Amino acid sequence: MVKINDNFLKLPGGYLFPEISRRVKAFSAENPPKPLIRLGIGDVTQPLCPAVIDAMHKATDEMSNKETFRGYMDDSSGYEFLRNTISEHDYKARSVNIGPDEIFVSDGAKSDCGNIGDIFSVDNVVAVCDPVYPVYVDTNAMAGRAGTVGADGIWSNLIYLPCTEANGFFPALPKKVPDIIYICSPNNPTGATATKEQLKVWVDYANAHGAIILFDSAYESFITDSSLPHSIYEVPGAETCAIEFRSFSKTAGFTGTRCAYTVIPSALVRGGVQLKSLWIRRQNTKYNGAPYVIQRAAEAVYSPEGQKQTKATIAYYLNNAKVILDGFSKAGITAYGGVNAPYIWAKTPGGIPSWGFFDLLLKKACVVTTPGAGFGPAGEGYIRVTAFGDAEATKDAVKRIIEVL
Ligand SMILES: *Cc1c(COP(=O)(O)O)cnc(C)c1O
Image 1 (tube, protein in one colour):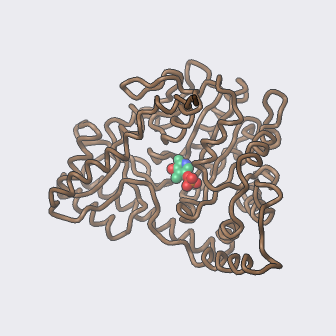
Image 2 (cartoon, helix red, strand yellow):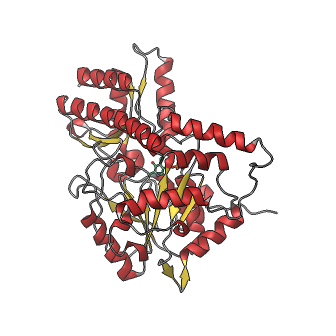
Image 3 (cartoon, protein in one colour):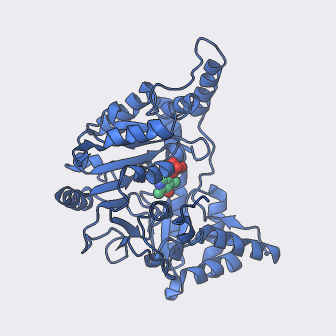
């Protein structure tokens, strides 16, 4: 008789987005006075840019020809053309010495953030920020690293690092020393972006304790303040303690196209082993690499036209963020993020609970947001609003919110 991985049974069952969808459906059935505007889920809305589409067409034509057809890659880590381009553009251009042999292309930062757990023992103690991108928590729970979950949603074996208004939404060092530390900057959900000085504290701490930082910078392309780091490797010492996750999803609208990469420096060694060698072994065993056509599409993001076009789309989203921030300010709502990130983290008025404010905005303004409490206990008293919407719809949503508050 087969035994299932009963760690899965401990998962509370994806409470947040199903519950939002249940409430939205129930409200829609009541014939709302206005069409709903959705500023909840973090998906992009603008199409792929022309440079990317052209590259995909060209690569598709290559696949139709016997001479230029591509089958399996020799190594699942990605084609040289893309790894070289990433190394030059995302690292060397910022004076960070990350070479193509330290870059591993994949189909997503979500899968990489989850799969990376394969190379670490189940006995490691994991620290996550609170509020948090749920993938870090659930993948560790599935692996048996999180312990058991209480009615309050707190896992017994995880260390929670509160990110609050008081600490500028960046975590302080914990009392108990973790082995694996997740940091996401620019942050989903708070929109906070770490400075080099803030990251340096964690880099020094991780090096001193032999811990590992899993650094998710899926939103780095939204950074507007030139003093802020796009990569954790801009902080000295990070090459001996950090793994970085990047994605084309939010940078270039690849949420449905799927391409990302993970950086594991050659200097990152634990237990006498280069961690990148374990990742290569893991990927070559369980993964055959991102599609050729998609890797050509990703390469095109770095062409001069690709850069111009993707930057224009990011500016469009950041303008939405500004519209939302200005609107909240007019409505007397305290809000954070939205300057170097596509998320606005807004404090509920009068300290009402997240879900209460969510319901109020849904029912009075017909605007869908995300209750902060769904990202962890420290998210209570906040809602997350995304800047990934249509510009006109975002303006309408903000107008409605100001009217009802
Ligand atoms: C959207 C997002 C990603 C990107 O995931 P993909 O699988 O590459 O689409 C990664 N991390 C965070 C925190 C995100 O919000």
